[in-house]
Image (cartoon, rainbow, N blue to C red; front, side):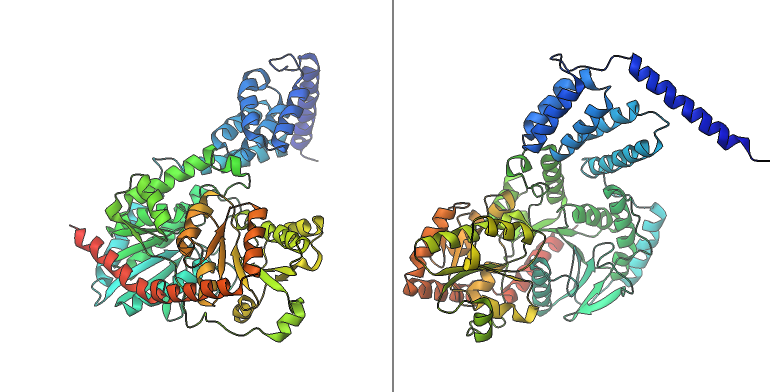
Length: 560
């Protein structure tokens, strides 16, 4: 005989649905405060979000929450609008309200909402001033025993907590790491790298590898939860780091910015405090504004302020802060971090590896560059801040002015199709060449194709303050450099002494500057020589090793 319970449950659910449907038909639908229907209010809200009027959308949500807080359709749109506006507290409130009006028989819908609420609550916890990754006291006690046994090194040992590393990730971040760790070895330091939890991913990953002579330890898990919240991930990260750091027993922990900036610092601080190790925070960028492509909203939303405040707390807690440029240092000191604890270790370049070289004829032919004025940029095509669309617009404008110019855009990434679509829309034709990803050993050959190296970054917070590696490499390769007039970039060009600038985001200003340089080969040669001489003397990676040692010794000398 069949079990009658499942049948009874189905009958009960059906009855509940019918009762709910009847109740909804009888109950009057909520109306907005102006008397319009919930459906009309929902459409207005969707339109505000679609047109990126996020401030208007948030204002409408707050104004109508009491009146429409019982309408599931309006709540669903409001929750999505709050998410896109970068308002996680409001998003959590709306998700709870939507759960409350979603009937219990709507199992899949309730499950999705509950999962969404769990995720947003995790993001809120991660940036709560009172929150820190948790460590088991017994695990800490065991780790300290290991630490005492493994301590007592003959050289200054520094553990570096990294977001990513070579060889799996080729980026400005990993290149800086490689050369700076080599410089530390030259300065008598024993560095060991520890990469972030779950990096690099994939199967058959060794727990310890040697990269360019430096030991790299991996924090690996057998299984990565698919629905893990960000705070739970950092708890797991700290638990994985604790025994590894104890085994290394370093004199000091050096934490480098993570994907969101502060998350590596939260983990590093928790573990360093547990093991009573001084720690340094290297702020490699300001990531609080990169959550959105909407420049007007990116620096105004709750997400921005929560992330910025969390990063600032980490800076204040560190024994010292290292950053990449004077513009970044000024921002950090402006947050209240004592100036004497904030140090600049600039980006650099290997001027022997990056050196002027002749153009390869096969590449000139492949890209159709013969006899043409070539300007361009070598970068990933992932982030809107790089502003490659300006290169496209300038190339078209130069052609209209009679300059046989071509923009060479070297690299690949998530925005490539978007930039290519822009080029097609403005009718760029062969005035723009997209190379796609090029082999690492051919990158310098692509630098050599360029008459003027352009860094067209838009006026965005990180672009204003963070110095990229590429201009240094271009200078070392003997190229004249033209940059947006943002502080982090004009700091490199010396306000015209070793590079020129144009108004950020202004395609006309970029076109004017390029037209002048196209007609003045002597000025291009002068800038190229000045830039090459400067990076050779002022921006060598080797000099950074001693800079780090001085910082470490200052920190260790201040310890009780």
